[in-house]
Image (tube, rainbow, N blue to C red):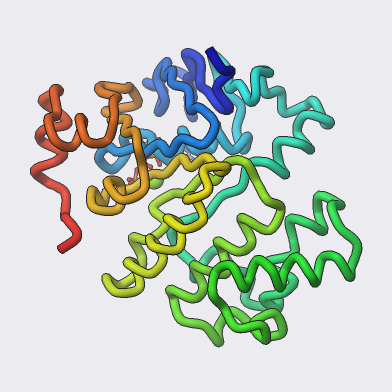
Amino acid sequence: MTTPLLSLEAASLAYHRGERPAVDEVSFAVERGRNLAIVGESGAGKSSILSLLLGLRSPSAGLVRYDGRALDLRDRALLGAFRRDVQCVFQDPYASLDPRRRVGAIVGEPLRSLGLAGRAERAERVAGALARVDLPSDAASRFPHEFSGGQRQRIAIARAIVSEPRVLLADEPVSALDVTTRVRVVDLLHELLADGDMTLVMVSHDIGVVAELCDETLVLESGRVVERGTTSDVLGAPRDAYTKRLMSAVPRLP
Ligand SMILES: Nc1ncnc2c1ncn2[C@@H]1O[C@H](COP(=O)(O)OP(=O)(O)OP(=O)(O)O)[C@@H](O)[C@H]1O
Ligand SMILES: [Mg+2]
């Protein structure tokens, strides 16, 4: 058996003492090159799980394991590799890009902060990332406000892939976009995942997007995993009552 790339082992996250944890003894593993969707209603703990997978918070119990090693946020060497390898895209492309910085600086930021490339190489890699997300080459010298929502989300994706991460974590990456733009961004993610090197963990309430991008789906209810399986099984023939309810309540792509 191969070592999973990223896993939670009985991980809990409690924001307040004495309250029921937002993530309650959750265990799952993602194999290299696989794509996992996390679904569940608002407040189920989806973003909280991503904050654990992203190393933004430490679990209050249990652990996060990356490439076989327990993730310890105090271990600087491991954290450095982890920050390079695990990148993320958030829901709101208006809030996630600093309006005062040029797109080139925004996209190149992971390379700069991780010390991965000098100035010249950075510019080259930024241009490469912008080209991969289908933005014009002069985009680097412009500011975020000059771009549409869909373009901004592509800038956020360029920033996430510029360090050539092994894992992309995405929290509702297309929900803020209108339907046509959404299709383009989903197609782009599909392309980026096509060679099978990158692993995606995505939170989405959009079943069409989940079906398009993820081979596996995990269903979360009040911080606990209630169902997990291949996306076609979970979406096509949900076993759990909660999943059934969720499926009948979610919007679908036309
Ligand atoms: N920073 C925080 N401080 C305190 N409580 C929090 C914090 N973030 C989330 N919570 C609580 O944890 C629970 C899970 O929240 P989380 O944001 O993970 O849900 P979600 O599934 O992502 O929901 P949504 O679909 O609305 O984004 C909720 O009860 C929420 O109020
Ligand atoms: Mg959320």
